[in-house]
Length: 82
Image (cartoon, rainbow, N blue to C red; front, side, top):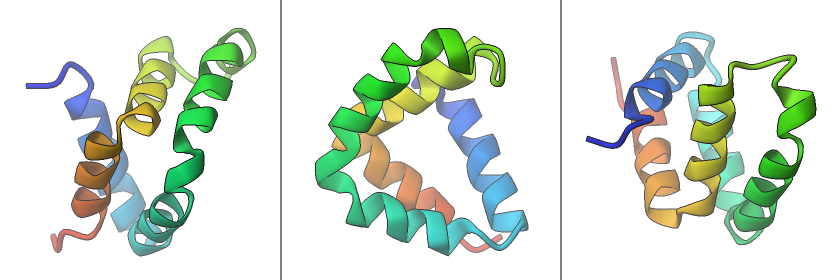
């Protein structure tokens, strides 16, 4: 099991609960070519982001963005029905 999978599952559940699952899934698909660059920005921004988010969540976001297979798995989670 991926170390951050529980964080991604929590995110997917929260986003679906708020009615944002499909929207975020679409954004992630459309921005796929930019995801690696976005992951690098997350890594660079860790000192600032750590004041807002837990470090594990920051790392989980960066890892999710830098791996297209994980991004697609997350998109699938977002589109799952409850």
